Image (cartoon, rainbow, N blue to C red):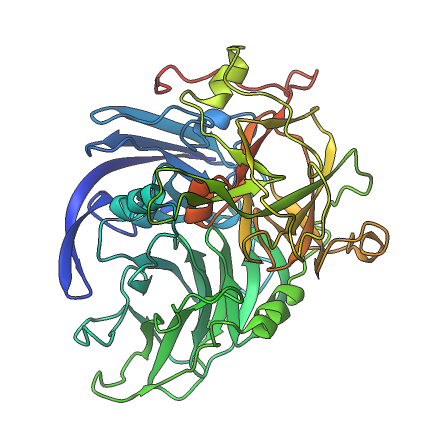
Length: 537
Ligand code: C2O
């Protein structure tokens, strides 16, 4: 195994999109930023130098960071942010993982422009469990705001209302031609006839689940969130913020130009964002650039059947080499309601004296002012409590009419798990404000998605239908609107691990919590010592 060294200079850069220019936060003057390449078992060293006016931290989304939360990145959870003029060396080893992941800023809304790909190749000499594609490309989906994203969220927090949606979606940084700016050039993926291409598709958008489709070409899904799946063919994939999906495309059509489309999925409620399809071009080499492009119609914004069909097709590979190790016995069986709520806010004029908040089990998470992992490691009192409820504080019809005047409580509450405990979490969407999709991400672990359904989870009947054989393994999962998902994992990674909705607006509102996994007794079962240059708050 090798050591892979990267330098990330966080700098401002004037960038033109949608026919106007603004200054954005970038890594090495690029957005999307540089791709991290490594092989399984390699050590990655990334020196992040902060040259901007904001505090910064970078998260290596999906990298398990065994015993090494110091390199995980979420600000105030595992580290204090890197202050302007300061730097920090993220130092981690990639263990037992191969595939596509992403890195992104994990503070404020900086991840809008501060993100990039992580490509983890299998160990030298180990083949993919599917025919080797002739070529590989990274395809990063994102969002673009004409205004400054920090201003967008600050304004929303002041008013108590929802923030403005973005002005466009992007594919590798470019929206493609849009009505008010038709001259915009989109990303072009050039292909050679009869060759196969693996696209490592990443959703780095702040707030949108997206469909991704290519005119005239089927996509063969082979991997999600850096875990192999049973290959299947589909016209469109669904990908939530934080998720990654590897697909294989055969350049087996008539030579020409084909539209690539990324479009939003939002079953309820409907914010009008469906005019924001980002487009790119699949271009067969030798085709004249003036020739007409074969168009595609993206699934409609509320195409729930397309979404369900895709999600239900995902199965882990479960082969001899890559067995699926679902915990069959559960030590901690938890039910977490996830959703939005309304709290009083006397200063919120636009919100009529109230504000939208978000919660898990009715707790709106309050960010601490020092990092939780340090507080845990150094035994600093008064930073967090370990009374996060394993069940909702009272039960009601989560997907029906909520109790009147339901307010959330606030706290920096963690749920404590003994080392190596097996955990099941049923994530139940609530309709307190409106049923809404929540892509929930767990740091430090992969989990198995053993069940999914609509309505209220029924422990008696639904648990009998769990897939404990080949459930998909991932790090980010969509909780369906007015429904639930059940996940299982083994708490084999001591530390403090964030779990939150990966729609940035919901994270900001408080849809987040953290697990505290205690040290085990073995010599390899406790948190590693912190690095010397760990930032201070
Ligand atoms: Cu990709 Cu806590 O985030």
